[in-house]
Amino acid sequence: MGRPFSPRDRFLRERANEPRIRINDGITAPKVRLISETGEQLGVKPLREAQEYAAERNLDLVEVAPNADPPVCRVMNFSKYRYELEQKAKQARKHQSQVVIKEIKLRPKVGEHDYEVKKGHVLRFLKNKQKVKVTIMFRGREMVHPERGEQLLMRLADDVREYGVIESMPVQDGRNMVMMLAPVK
Image (cartoon, rainbow, N blue to C red; front, side, top):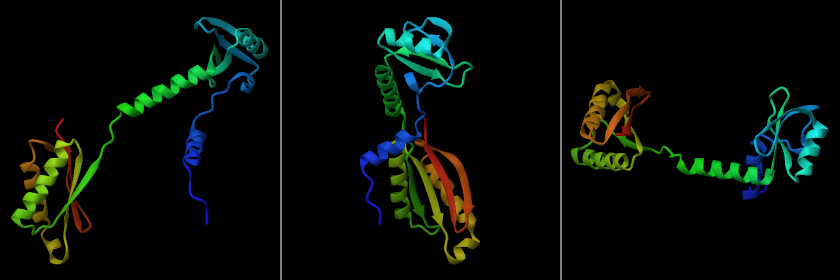
């Protein structure tokens, strides 16, 4: 039996998937295209000369385009560069919205009050900008009349059309019929 994962394990796993940025002695190409700390192109130089140029300025030689021929290297403060990359990634994560899909299940012979309660749930989800997957579950002989399920789904879509639109039309999926509703933009 293995030990439980710690947050550090997850961090290391995530870091393993990141592309490695080669710096200073980690660069292996014999010649590199050198860019100064001010962004000025200094031309193609032997690796040793580029490393000495960076060392004179107490900065790092960072490989920014490893697939170019020759690879492009820039003279910069690597720890500051890495910090800025992390801040950009953090901002990108902050501004992306997670799509949440809620699911509501109904029966083809649902009572009027039960239908109204479920419709209220669907409305609440759509008002909160969440997608809703509405599922009609058939059992036994109810499978003979899939049109009843489709009518129920279309009635629900019509009742909530002010807040949601049909993203995918009702589709029979084995013993279930499924329809997706998305919030109105």
